[in-house]
Length: 356
Image (cartoon, rainbow, N blue to C red; front, side, top):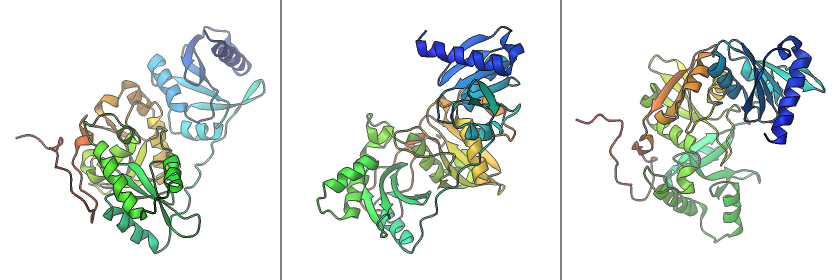
């Protein structure tokens, strides 16, 4: 066992002995945990989270539920982000108890509210630029006060307003935008955007060889499909939406949210995810609270829905609904943005349409 792992187990045993001496004297099994260590008792799981990411509630619930059942108690001791963890833990029953480390002992953590999103982009220019982005073949997405140009969820440009005037910065990610600015060819920005859109669309198609353009931001790609085809998840309409519960950073896994209504007129938030993430249920519950939605739908490809996710979802105080999308979801044909120029791609068969 690595020395660091041994130290984590020793630290956790000492903290458990300090707060729960009777439990520490009984049989406790050591379990590996991604961000620290865990001790398993007859009906309780103790977890030490040494990270500062605030992403351990889901993993702790998954381990406890798989080993002891969905009624198992969870004691989560964290080195950082304890306020965020305590807020997330309150969405579940029985509640997850979150503790902050205070020297050799633990103290109860107090829930902290979500930070608010930054102000919305304002001004007459917003509508005009949304139209110009669509005319260049991209989807205009306004999130957290930033107007982005996306191709199937992948940001290829954004409007920067730091100078007081809106400026279109083309590039996939901050470093790519800086590179475009440094190598200024004098090309008109929306001409550069059209070229970037064409380049990305060649790669961001179902069945294309692996390329950064089709591997990045796949959660947002799935969300783009669901926004265009909301019936896949039982919605009447959906719109991409930002929430501080789901921060977005290129190259870092993060589910993507869409807000809309179902056939009954109830508000619903759909959280799209591609890949296996033990924190998906937690992030979805956090997004539902942040957006004030009545329903929560977790949308994942069929292959990414795992039993531990169901077990975590069963513990939610307010239930969530799973929607598995087919493995061919990336092949679903979507409408091109209104006013888009350039040749359209050949229509692909709709994998959602029943064959005759």
